[in-house]
Image (cartoon, protein in one colour):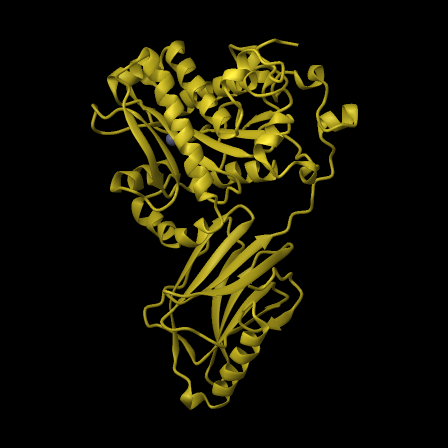
Amino acid sequence: MLEWSDDRSGVRGAGYSFPVLSILTLFVGWGLFAAPAALAAVSVTALRHFSTEGYTRVVLLLDRESLNFRSGRLKNPPRLFVDIPSGRLRPGFQMPSFDKISIARKLRVGRPGKNLMRLVIELRGGKIRHKIFTLPDPNRIVIDLREIRIARMRPHPSQARSGKRRAPRAARSRPGPGGRSPAGDDRIGRAILGEVGRSPVPEDKKRRSPNMTARFRAGLGRIVLDPGHGGRDPGASGLYGLVEKKVVLDISRRTAAALRSLLPAGNTVLLTRNRDRFIELADRTSFANRHDADVFVSIHLNSSPIRRTRGVETYLLAEASTPRAMELAARESGTTVSRLSDLQKILNDLMLRSKVTESHQLASAVQKSSVARLRKKYPEVKDLGVKRGPFYVLVGAKMPSILIEMAFITNSGEARRLRTKKYRHALSEGIAKGITRFVGISVQRASGASLITGKAQP
Ligand SMILES: [Zn+2]
């Protein structure tokens, strides 16, 4: 594969990692190009695209392999071109309209030479790197665009105070962002160092051990909890006036507190939001990426038009395992099943970069632990298991990432329990223990071992 290229103008041939193959390809390709009559036409049948914050993938679908396409970058306006000899657009090809967050702005099509089609993708300003490669079955040219961010130079608050990465306990134990503690339990606020847009990113990523359990034992682990929805997006509404965004925030705070008491001192738990505010889905995972989090858990409540439907289920990002998973993913992503099917189509590509195996392990640990903890008090709790779905909120996460649907707020039994502190506490403990097990910290040791902080307050 080609390395990422920056925005210097230049032309490159089709991407192959093997030099001999590359030369051969160019030889054969341009040899044929010199005799256009012999070259079979290549039709671009469709263009698919997908974006998260700072990342866009554009996929050109071809009816046959293009051995000799070329690509390059040009300035004023910033753009990327792909030249396809004997290329054409299939009749009925739909010109794309890119999302607001997309790095790609616009597609243009030109014919700079006889028998040569040039696709021009106009790009957003700023420093953009691109990578272009081909995939077979179906034949595709894939263009990944990535925005290069200038690192934020503000020191971490704890570094400013102590010169070390982790501040002394007293310094860390201040209330949550906004200068006041979340309502109710002050202990919960102390577990939180920041939320989306409000916390500087630590700059010592490289000093961390590559082994996750070692990181958590050393107090250098980071967990991001993501209370679903917020602000103008209330999520699902259920019985007894329950609103998803409120309940999940409360349970997320409780989970943060439970994690703090289970994990060795120094480990960080971050919430994507610690109050009722709206956050874009893409900002949630990019927050976790920027913080180099080890684990990302999005916390939600389920709903169903069928009142008797109940139970706990945990999802990882993958093609939907059932039609219901697809509907749920669409609802949680604020979109429709038909729009989501575009994501589903390019999900195989995206999944190559996501941690599917680890996410599955995390999902199993959290699902198992949540159900087990609930069943201690509520033996009839239904285990709906680990499932797969194309959830936008999990796309782009660089760490194991899951979404838990803790209960159905449309089921009278579960909704009634969700109103109680006892049930919320049991849920948060179950989730926290599952995460703790996944990162390799033994839950049993938490109560007594000197390695573990326990519940003692500073
Ligand atoms: Zn939700």
